[in-house]
Image (tube, rainbow, N blue to C red; front, side):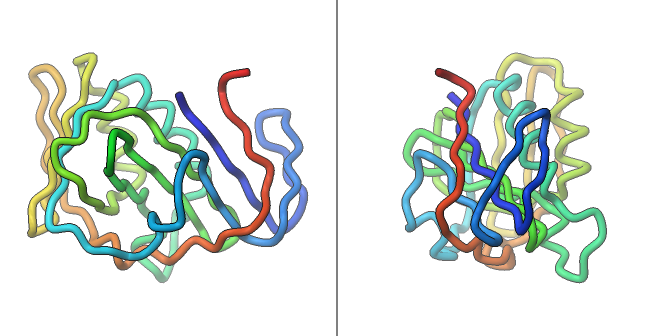
Length: 173
């Protein structure tokens, strides 16, 4: 299941929902504070449901900067651990995070350019998506007969997302 947290400096309407929050913070449920330690992983290898990934990427992309002096803010942070893939979009004012179920073959983290990653994921033909990164930050995205290799950024370049109280929403009752 997907879980979302939105935090903004001011009240903001998102898809007919009015969200109120303490200044600039994002948290996802379920997660723990270890998720933002900046630990650097050499590689990542996961498999997840394509439709869940499309929904997650669409949601976190709302908070991604289109132009920024910090290149990592133009991307989506992917962090794989345990049996979940954590995704975050953040522009220093608004942050959106989500977690989806995934088969984690190798834990790791990477930042991928949001626009390119979103376009690739939406156009993939298969039901499952395999994402693998190497120590040089090359990321291979496979589904069905399609395979893409794109360059990522080190996750430690992604700014730390501050924690605070915010309204948590989930897609299930």
